Image (cartoon, rainbow, N blue to C red; front, top):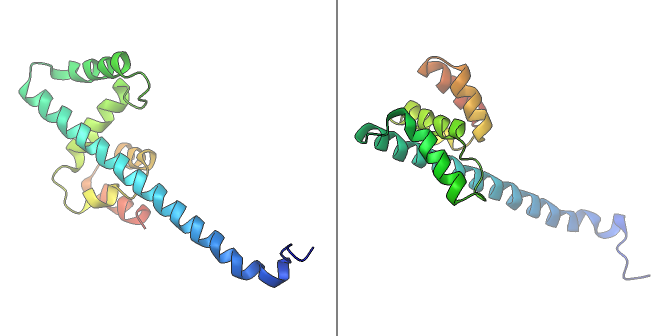
Length: 133
């Protein structure tokens, strides 16, 4: 019975371990999210530039989505609609040195909400600054 930890004796000290775990887990989620947003920006840039210099035109999103679905069915998130959003995401923020670092601090869903709900650059930046805290 002496091996059992009494809540009042060690609980506060060992609870700090849980705080450490939770902090690191949250840091990991943020880093994964940041990498995902950077991936979407990179894919958006690649397809935006390919669309500009190739004969694909607006069919590029369909061709890219078909390619991903047919050749890499296990990789999710590359539907025609989502690829269109990646291109729009990149084209919206490509020259914005203030907004680009902020978008990596938000989830993809929140970025899409700001992108679709804000018409002006200033409005997007306002919401990015609020939510990137």
